[in-house]
Length: 205
Image 1 (tube, rainbow, N blue to C red):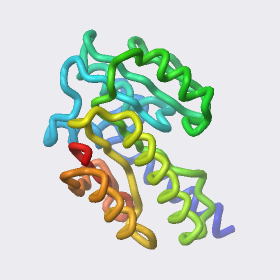
Image 2 (cartoon, rainbow, N blue to C red):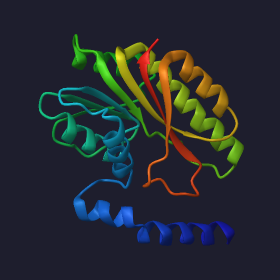
Image 3 (cartoon, rainbow, N blue to C red):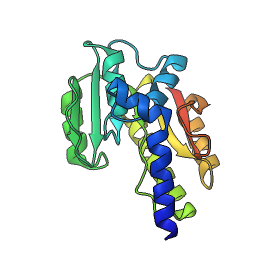
Image 4 (tube, rainbow, N blue to C red):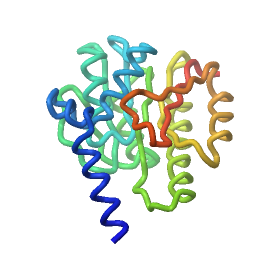
């Protein structure tokens, strides 16, 4: 019963969320699009002609924003284990980005171009057990950091969702070891009660 009540409350909040309503009205696939737009308005990550990799892209809200902002001279690659409906101008690869075959597909599409921005709004399937969920979120963030270090150009950036909790400080330390500057972002479209924040690393060491 508790789970059912919680699910109903979440659905009621979700349906009434102004960002959810605005996303539907404007044609964005998720309310997360507004998070990326706000961060990009501040930090100017999605430059015209930029090469972007969106890890855990489905349903595609971040990829929609990215492809619009980098323009026809840019490239947007979206990767996810789940299927994603096509987005014009976005190259989608279905699979696990940790697997060699998926990376090979990406590298073939990239050619000689280096990535300017790796972004990850990935979240695992939540168990409802805070310690377990926190560990899963931070593990995904660590994988994204490893991917970024391997594929970003020297002045590139990595934007990643994390949860504040256990392992957070250790991950921030790893980010600072990898990038010259690390900033914290909490966009307005991120619900106040949510533990999620975004870390932005710029300029690889």
